[in-house]
Image (cartoon, rainbow, N blue to C red; front, top):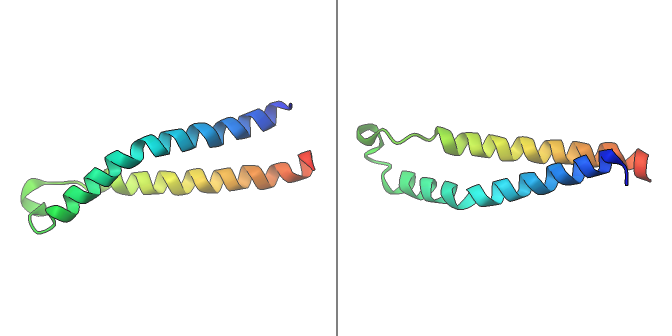
Length: 76
């Protein structure tokens, strides 16, 4: 197989494993934020990690789609 194909497959699989492993942690943070939404100012609970996780998932998905579409002319 070509090196480009291995890079694409590796990027998608490693990214999926990382995002899946972080999913439970982000679910707990969102549950904590929802539970304490009225007292967020006093406890200084940050929403930044959840927002950055969503941004990361979106960027990973877009890059994966781009790599797959870009490889069509090469492997078809």
